[in-house]
Figure 1 (cartoon, rainbow over the protein chains, first blue to last red):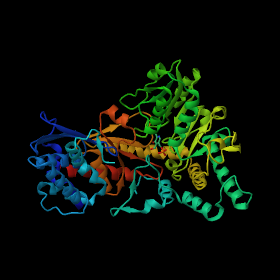
Figure 2 (figure 1 turned 90 degrees about the horizontal axis):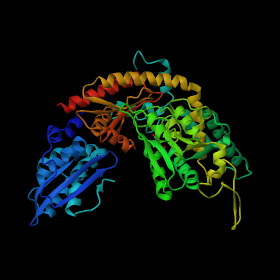
Figure 3 (figure 1 turned 180 degrees about the vertical axis):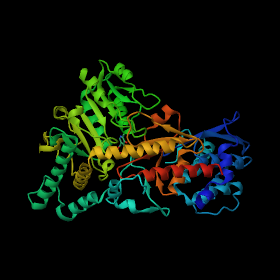
Length: 146
Length: 411
Ligand SMILES: Cc1ncc(COP(=O)(O)O)c(C=O)c1O
């Protein structure tokens, strides 16, 4: 049960129950939808990208605690970053949750490090990030985790 | 075990080697039987024995092994025939599973008989396997799909069904038992109503075959599809039952070896039933394993299995539904051992992970029945599904596991 407590930290429950930056973003100029067909998790990510930086980011959708908390934490960490920085952060985050990299420098995203002990849940943690990347690329098709 | 668990179930459990295993250092509590069932020694041994002693290709050689393999294969067909009480073994077609069986009917029967504007009736609780093959047929032919609504308990609305049956109805395709809800559908009545206007009925028996008695002649269904792996048999083997009159008039589904009687480059004469629908080398070991599984179930007896599973289901239902914040999805009066639910605190996916760490295997997701999730306005459910080897004690472990979910989520 200890690794369950590592996975489900209080911060995660907090973001699950009170997701930050939730709902459509009125000034969004990029958006994408993500879907995990295995479990039905859905997210939409809205971005407001202006003069080479992410001015604002919102999300909405329905998902498990890991998916929702990850999306919420992501929105908090992306504001003010350039698209390149956002993609680098995504790679770094991905490496952490797949156990191929360290937590270092990930700040509050570190609370999701416990996911590495739960390989079936990696897709929950990364869905919002994949969707954000698709939004940056302005993908027309919804992204899926499959 | 628990005082209230019978000696019978304690003994049956020893027939299934995997039930001795541990997951995350806890004894395995396998409650994902609607996805697939575990296999008894009899089945594992029957397959191994076939490969050790009899393996050869069937219907092809004069040599001894080929003859033995053919006999094994045809003996398995006979066992299926008796198990579902078909009139003849030639009405039993071995395929990969339910999905392939429904696709066969859609493509062979549907494509050759149905025309633009014709209608196929399915229900709101179908598995994707009993939706998508018909949608593909709709795209190919212009046939239309009509969907029977269900009530909040997850029961088919018979009056709405009757209204859907009309002059353009050409086929009814419904599940005998729903995989997402556990509902046992009133298929006998539904078949009678369809037959009154000469419409044939296909039953998706994937979730019924291991849990309720199936007598295709008493039901008078026209097609019945099921998968071996859901009745303690191997994966990759399944059955389509069809009435001889219908099968005879249907064109082959696939072309290849075994399904022909003679071939020249100008003309092919098709083989007789059931071989017309069994192109290529079949899954003989799978059929043998399925035969062993049906023997195993037959020896215990479906009535005994049903009584036991109902007992476990009732216990689980009363324990789980009394946990605060749990809503059951699927509360039909007639149900098999399937308990689908959502929790106020936690998403089904989180429930699945937390139970898994306690050794308890359930399914979380949409159960390949996304329209049903929409019907209930939930993204996913957690589903515990019981088989003959599950115990009242395991139902208690499930409930205790769910209490742990709440404990963890409420910090
Ligand atoms: C009601 C129902 N129909 C069809 C299927 C498909 O069975 P298979 O995947 O064995 O072809 C299933 C299995 O999940 C089912 O539960």
